[in-house]
Image: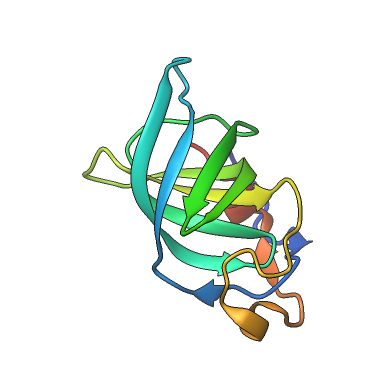
Length: 124
């Protein structure tokens, strides 16, 4: 899919680089239930970018992410297949907003940044 890289969308908060271990549960592209051990690459108050996903997902899929004692529902908003591996990175948007969703404090609450639309939509 070709996307005009000049198009920009508002990000709801700046990203905080954070590698946190998470467990991800959901249903993959083939309709099979899965559970992956993965990790965050960066987080915001309302989303995250995860690495180490070993199942192919679809845009708009819903997944549950477990981090410490927290359990949060997310929607997949972009997908990137990692070249030379069987892993994916996925961009997630929380279905409900938890002020301290990642437990990292105030650094998640900052001025919105912009991200190219092509990054937000991603593809497999």
